[in-house]
Length: 477
Image: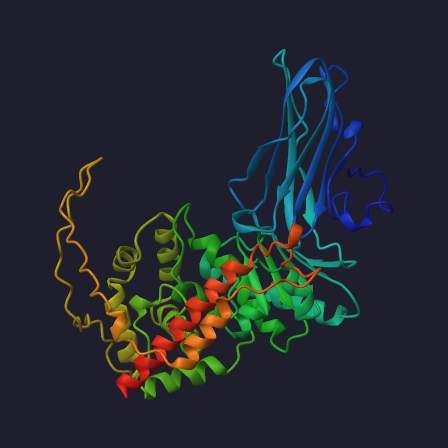
């Protein structure tokens, strides 16, 4: 079992506020009169699998409950779980929280807060209070640089690149926070990996790689205000600005259960990119000329075709740029506020812009000189099968219908089969008893043959069948 004593013993767990929490007895007890004494409260990072919690406590009454609260400062809700232990006046409670899969996934570099709660049979309650720690990737020795609310963690001789990423993130927040109506002081953390092999371990399992640089080379996790960036990419600065805008957009528009449509989310993120590339603009021009634009109504999610993804990003950026430049940033802020309150997209658009989603698509296409969108429903190309009533079956019933007897096979007149003389001689010689050789496998006690009679009969039957087959072949020819 793990016990955090010194940084040298468990350096790969990254403890004590720089990587993980270690609350000693003095920090855990609220005062000398506290009926519950906490002698150890710790959380050990086992990246990328999860976090191991451990609490040692004692009380005059049996301790009945030990629980942990784990949360991100960016989330309104967190995790509440009980640690396993035996009820007694002294307990050693433990829990492993899986953080590498599904909804429990936590990205590398995320800032977390943890608190432990202990209760005994007498009704006494003790809480350690929240303390911060960072869920770090222990494979590397991370160096942190910060400016305002932005922190960038890097490792290796890439300080200049990390400083450029930090500057880009600060610029993005200063530019886009007023546009979206978001507090620019919200903390954002970025972890920079030097190559894709390093970053692949830190990405969520099952993430879809569709060949697009902003997806393969960076990932934003708005519920943790955390970004993963591939620092060796030539698009690293643009990726940093794009992903940071994602965090601001989700702060402004995500509700408790609702999520922004992909075209609006990605369009705002690329609008806020301080170092955009040219591929999206070229793809948009190509789609307009070849009539390959996507109906905005169908752009709730990324398209499955990799060729359409580039068009999707270029079109999304253009639609959002039209909404902001033509109608002003105040309306985009009002739209996000309505979406955050739970309004449907079409209703929110109508209340702010006086347009539904299809009308917005039409006016944007008219502005761009593109053909009108086709929202017609294609006709069915095949008829539906005629429904057939299922047979009714009663419980414990048998099918009593009579079964027709199978037709009897016609008898074969063996006398008509001509058997060649040499075959008959062979059969007679095969069935004639032979004296076994002394010591042979067929010799039984007193010279008995045992299996000889049966084998002879079988051989004779085989030869008769062969003769009949030869006769039948001659008759058919």
